[in-house]
Image (cartoon, rainbow, N blue to C red; front, side, top):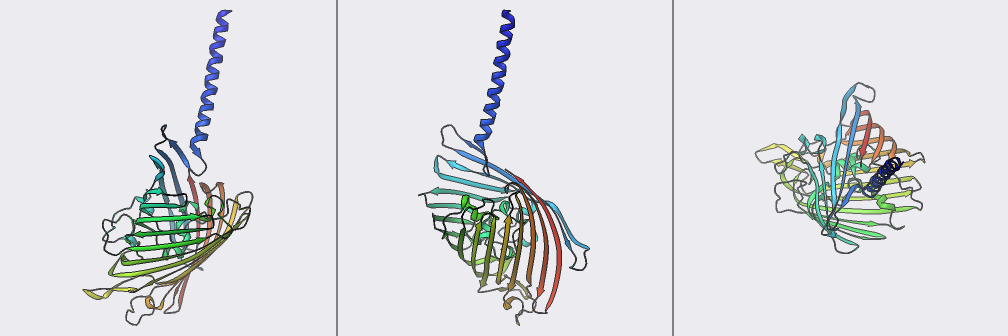
Length: 410
């Protein structure tokens, strides 16, 4: 009898230990697995913390030869993005760090359009900043990260409602740069600025020209829910109308590359000016977004001194993007996008440089997204209509396309 009781006590104890372990495991994951924050650890003495996140975008895409010829011109089957992030604080909650690495070939600027003398290797490092929060409103950083440019560029590629950003962003974005960055955030406005190298990310040297960026954002109805103004679509289903109006100006002195922080080398240094204005409105699942961008240059076309027939140019002109979407209660979203870019006549009808003929473009996209777990797990399908116009010769070429993309991350 005593033996049976002893065995019963041992079994009960083991069962209790198993339950405790399960509870402990559940509590562990509840503590460290946080929505949109990945896996988070805090050192026992609270002198160090880190959050780990990863995400991937796997894509299949098709583009027709023309709008009447559905023969494939291209297929795209690849991992478009594969990224890992680490962020947290060290020694003080006010002293923070942020690191983001990219691993897919298409995400490392490893192609012919990004080759230049100061940045000619695959770029794994996207962000590497050290920041200090001087006050609740004022934050200052040193390192490499996105400039406070057009809104769609600052929105993470993991928080887009289409498979990729628009042609307006691709043409006029400021992208990333290394230098000093600062932000001053209040409930109804934000001020952001940066003084950076002007050469883009992961360069091995900088010249004596710098890049200067300033941005102002006005929030007449107050802050969006959980930074929802920098997430595409209205996944927060804003209970009250929210609006943000913003503008950015950038001056890149002695730019070496075609787009300042991006592109191939120019044959001569050029001063570039970029201006963008944007707005976003969200309310109960409906989202509307618009941005206008333009670029000017004192030398839109540069010439090779050894051969005046060889030229390289910056895309000076303007573009506009409009997006609208609605998120249903079953977490399906429909979205539509219209975007166009138009060059200035100096780069398509210049009597001195007849070999330069930059094209105008128009894109119309229709998107359907199923959000399984917010932007971290989603299925995206896009139909595209693309038009390229030769303004000098009054010619036009149109294409159709389709994209299916799966995103998974923590």
